[in-house]
Length: 146
Image (cartoon, rainbow, N blue to C red):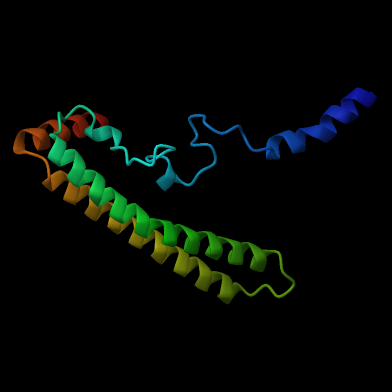
């Protein structure tokens, strides 16, 4: 019985423990850190893997991504601060529904802006591809839409 109580008492701690770094989950890093790891080099997204990119195309795409990801890091910090503010408000004696709605609207606007910028980046990358590469990519994407 004592062992059962001990095990049940430790379960929440194991659930909250951070997984070891280096796994498939990105080691707890924000998504924008998953492409460029310890070597500091920007890696290409997987959807470009089988397109036989030229060295110039790879360099151009990496430069685009480096620029955009750098901008995204500041937005990620802003998003994190906004979530912390909403969390603090939710567990505060001074909870105000209008304030919570305003924070949620701000969060939605941030997500919309991030999605728009990702869409622009995807388009810019797409425009760097040759016509044959574009067709091949569209065919690959078409396989996953069904």
